[in-house]
Structure formats: structure tokens, C-alpha cells
Length: 81
Image (cartoon, rainbow, N blue to C red; front, side, top):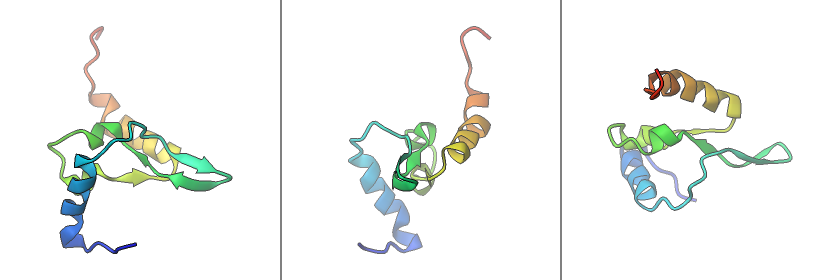
């Protein structure tokens, strides 16, 4: 494992975003242990957001859901509105 300093974090995130092959953003747990953190699909693919923020992860589903509801769902324009 390699530690990434704060000034190198955006470049590190950029390499992950360029090679992103996993289509799943949900949190995966096994016996109360986080196997894979969750990512916000809205943030992940929004190129206007700094790379370090796009890779923000969550280990609790309720907190990730609150983020998505506050930051994204309320801003989505639905065709029937």
C-alpha cells in the first residue's frame, strides 16, 4: 500500500477515473465489514467537480443516500414536472 499526499491526491484520483471499469457504486459489506465503499454516481461522472471530490466514498448507505438527496436528487429536472 502506498500513501498519497494531499498535493498528489487529484492526480491519483484521475488515474482511477480514467480506468474506471466497475459499474457498481453501492456499498458492499460482509458481516458488518465494508468490502468496497460506495461512490455517488452523480459526482463520479461529473467532470466539473474536482477529481478528489469525485472519488468521495461512503461506508454507510444512509449517509450516501442523504448526500445524493441533498446534492443531486433535488436538482434533477423530471420530465413530468
